[in-house]
Length: 264
Image 1: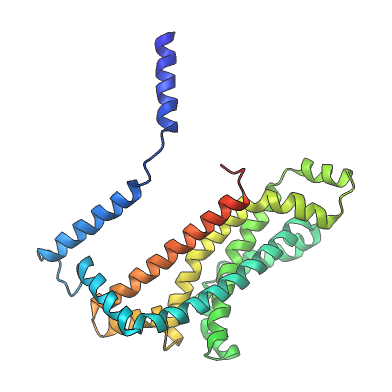
Image 2: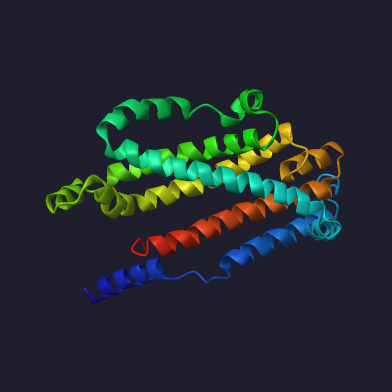
């Protein structure tokens, strides 16, 4: 019996064992070293896969010259505004669709019928309506962000325990207070899941829109150097996009831990 308890204790301890904070960095470092070796010994031509050290040097040169600054500023402007608008509208509409039965009956079929449409396919239409300037790009990003957020918010509202809602109403809470103090806190885990999913979608739409209809931006820069076959500068753009995605993810994770301390 004691032996069986010891085995069970060891299994539980294995599940609870914390991974060292540097484990992720070791994995990335190992991948970069392998990449460097493959490029340096000529297994893959530098034209197709430049070494990480070459990409870093090229990126520094582009940063010093100011080339990265202009493209990065243009991309950040588009993605921040588009993401903010899409997220706010997605959360509001998700709460409405999930809480009010009439809104659910009318709005949910519309959301689910439009959601499968590839949003980048609508860009030419938005350019026709809104022009080739910033508004069409911001709108396509906001639209792409809206749907994952509204669907996850809707699912979060539906997952809230109905007994909590009934208890709040019984104690005299009006609809606004029920949404603010019961529905919204209970939906936050699903809302953040939608926000994280939408972050990746927003980057994808940003790059696609800039490749199609922009003279400035990271997506436009990647396409330009791809056409010129200057792979090192192309990879600098890819690296910047990767860092943007990582920053989005870490920022949302930090905000989630602050707003949902009970999740852990």
